[in-house]
Length: 518
Image (cartoon, rainbow, N blue to C red; front, side, top):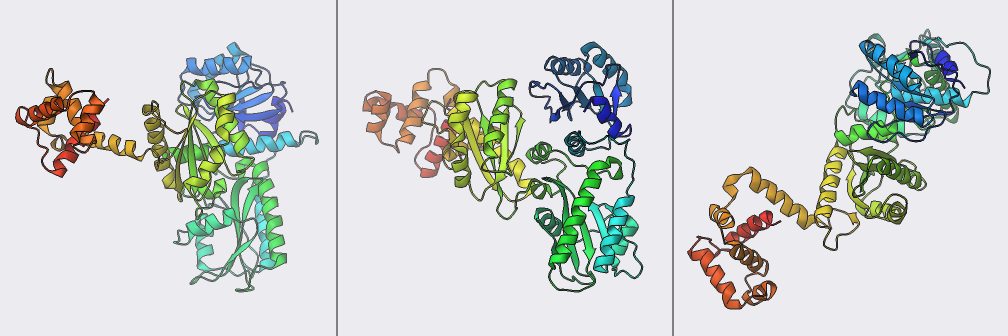
């Protein structure tokens, strides 16, 4: 399809052209552009750029010029109205069509709609669609006549998009309240029920709970893209879901999914691509609690985070690393998702423990070394069982990679877990404690370390403590006479006031000296 045809199909309330460059260029596909990465080769590709709002005009102009050089069909951005003249100038100078996406249209839904239109490009093009939500109400009524109870069609934010109005349908107070507010009322069962529904492939049934009538629910999906859910009160009572009920709900789900993709203006959900979901999890900001369900990861089993680091890798190598990781990982882990974030690549997939994730990561290392660069290290953190756990796993992965980099001179493994660098983590955390709390430090040791000409004494103390007070081993490691070791220890005690008689004193002294060691 041409870019102009896509714009016409989506309609001006969804997307609009900025500036003068023509829109007759052919679009063959879409791809999300991470502004932290180098623009990829993109002949015929419409680039979707969710993170350009914070870019300066000069930086955005450079991105547009790079996209034009690599054959992109256009660049889609979100912007305020006062930036339109500047973006029009960028479009004119670069020759690349720039498109403005409406603020209320989510990036993931836009991508799904574009993919849907491009996939049907051989079919005759209809005019811009503006069907409203009426088909969803008709679908809800059809289901209500079958189930005998009220039906609600909801988006991922639990807003009620459509509901049934069949005379005589069974309805309860919860459904009535939801219809009046157009929002599902809060309930202690909500989170667990919605996660279960979104993970289910077919219809599931919930029994009567207090004043709530039995309900049959099914997820609305377009491929792997979750869009919402359908809930039907079952007037038949507590029995299990029948094959006919399951078939009706599956068919309704497919129809509702097609409608939600075709009519972006029928709702205002805040869906994002899988990569954006992972970025949200990595930062721990604006979590909804349903991210695992939307990524297809069962919370009961958990997810493990892998952090990939290639020393000295630039933006191009990072982009290639992400592409290599996800391309080969999804062959064995279809639920895997990967993003480039702050110069590293992180991937999340379902795994019950660290050992399972290490087994998955190991075959990737020689491939990455060959295709991206040598010296790749992988940190394994988890498992995380809730959305809020992933940010902590990312912080741990960063600490593991940092510890591995600082210990590169030793036999540090390529796959790093908390188990194999735990001593380094302990020392680093102790160093942070000493830096933050002066009362933990022994002033005599600080004075000894800062005094001129006392480095041999400090070095001898540290090695002697590491040798558990064995003078002979200390002398051998330092390549000095044993009497020299005894003399230095005596000076530390008598001249500088270092106390080492008690075990706790020796432990505290070693931790302080070790934390100060380069």
